[in-house]
Amino acid sequence: MKIVIADDLPASAVALLRAEPGWSVDAQSGRSPDDLAADLADADALLVRSATKVDARLLAAAPRLRIVARAGTGVDNVDVAAATGRGIVVVNAPGANSISVAEHALALMLALARSVPAADRAMKDERWDKRRFLGTELRGKTLGVAGLGRIGQEVALRARAFGMRVVAHDPFISTEVASGLGVELISLDEMCATSDYVTLHLPSTPETRHLFDDERFSRCKRGLRLINTARGDLIDPDALHRAIDAHIVASAALDVFESEPPKNWALAKLPQVIATPHIAAATEEAQELVGLETAAAVRDFLREGVVRNAVNFPSLAPEVFQRLQPWIRLADRLGAIVSQMGTARIEAIGIRYYGALAETAASNVLASSVAAGVLRPILSGGVSLVNAAAAARDRGIEIVESRSSRARHFTSLVSVKLHTSEGERWVEGTIFEPSTPRLVSVRGVEVDAPLGGTMLILANDDRPGVIGDVGTILGRHGVNIANFALGRGEHGVIGVVNVDEDASSAPTLDAAVEEIRRLPAVREARVIRFQT
Image 1 (spheres, rainbow, N blue to C red):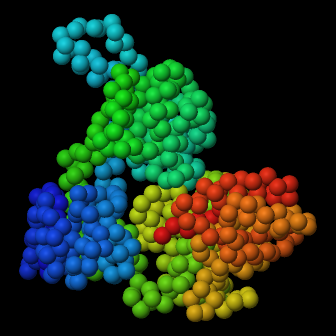
Image 2 (image 1 turned 90 degrees about the horizontal axis):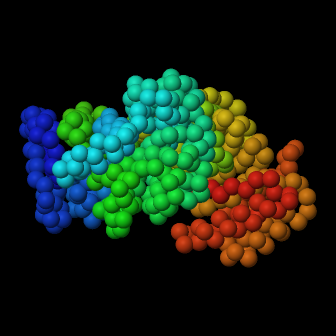
Image 3 (image 1 turned 120 degrees about the vertical axis):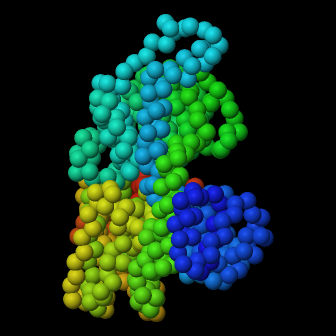
């Protein structure tokens, strides 16, 4: 067994693998791509951090490779699709650095409260400016936590120990999880308006990019102190600069930037800003734990076939997985649809299997696939049918499966119902032979639409001219309709429109949908995009 370690890992992680009898461990960092490709020709496993790019070309040079392990939380430097196509398992080490990031956020918060860096600089300049550095206590202040995942929860626990009132905004965390932490869930606007400190722990998605812009800052409590240890693109840097100039934001502490290192250093140089070079996760303990978790995952896979922390592999026999593959894709897409049919706090995911599908022993994989489809549009990186159930549990989202031998109109059917704080969203789908996923029901209204590309789901009054108006608006914006399906129900009409779209035409479609929403007969219009 040959294991190649291409980036620096702790000695303990390397030793864990070298302890296995008969295993060869080649640990060298800084190899050229050609040298690494040559060394992978007979390798069974590859371990990397962030420096090595594992692309399709490198994978093609490794015909025996069975597992790629990324010692870190993300897999941005690994071509997961190419690895999956080759049957290579990709694993990472999620959550191993949560404590380190949380502690750094608290360190920055304290530094803002007591002007620690400025006081230190004054001392080094031999200036005793004692009166200048009047600070404030954290006790009694309100901390707003944007994103109550693993790291956000750790921050909340520590902030409460300082006597802070903690509120949070996270539409995908249950009230039970928040209550257990002593945290009140509120809207983002309310959080910004009432918080003395705001700390960001959100993923980077199209929806969260520049979440804190001029408009958002205008809604913030005057004198806000802002901390960001998550992703640089959550904040519009120019807007933050203006908010500081306008005294809306009293000070900010930034560990992450939109481009790293920053192309424009003006923000980092402001006296009101404490800046660190993306070091929140850079502690001895975090690096040690990440390395050990990654090495252990590789060891367990190669020695026993156990898959842990995988981002692309289900716990199924290959032949069963192959048979279920069309249904796995269907389940994922049904989850993606209900996830994008509105914004609300998700409380539970209900999945019901009808007909022959109800008899399969591997239906839990389909439930995980539904959960992956639900969570992928709202979380960044690494959500798959392997880890989606755990991600849902972390957020207090219950997954409920049920079965019925009744076939209804199809041999097999999957029904997905999302229970949210704003009500239920319900869709159903099936597979048309040989392996084509179809959407056959939306909110109990029968439709028949292919599940792929980009979809527009409409709810409107049953009156003449609506279809024509929708088609006219899409045509005027240059959006091509690939399929238009309609279903009539007791409370109106459901329309499912499949449209042609690429990355460059997304703004055009969004503009068209905004116009469609203004039609008097249209009650709702949602764009559904499927991520891979």
